[in-house]
Amino acid sequence: MSLVEPIPTQPAVPWQPFGPLTRADLDRMPDDGHRYELIDGALLVTPAPAIRHQIIASNVNDILKRACPAELLVLFAPVDVVLATDTVLQPDLVVAAREDFGEQDLPVAPLLAVEVLSPSTRRFDLMVKFSRLEAAGCQAYWVVDPDTPSLIAWELQDGAFVQVAKVTGDEAAHLTSPYDVTVVPADLIS
Image (cartoon, rainbow, N blue to C red):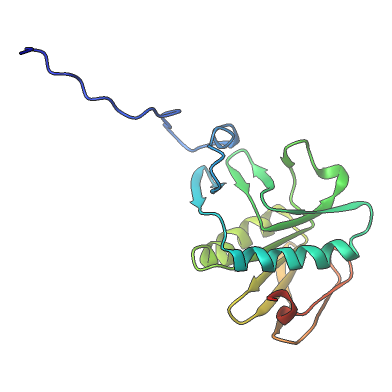
């Protein structure tokens, strides 16, 4: 019998944070299907979206791509939008000037950010992302609620988001920022 007890092993930890996380820390997160975002150095982890969420986001993507001018680019998540070293968001869709994209991310506010609401992200999308994108100068922000179905769209005016459309079901939203496009919420859920 040994007089020395074995030392229990602890799982490996990639780093021991002592303060707010940064973009560099975010780059070390595993590629495991989760969405990793930073808000003021705090890590937000959400699971991969449900199939219904992805169908709706894909349909919005199709509508935006069909109308997109050549100098702009529409990208589907995951795309890091770097608003500060300690704030990195991943909207479901972004539209920005092609020249604004870096090799790995969008280092400026997009012209348009779109979120499809889900139970786990609803408050975050409507409050935190809304305010961070507004403060960063994002020109337009849309949220699609699959449960209604509905679309609410805001545009930046004098530094603040102003609601420019709220439609449900078969109603059409005719939007102009960042370019002319029409969205019918009922068409997004099929």
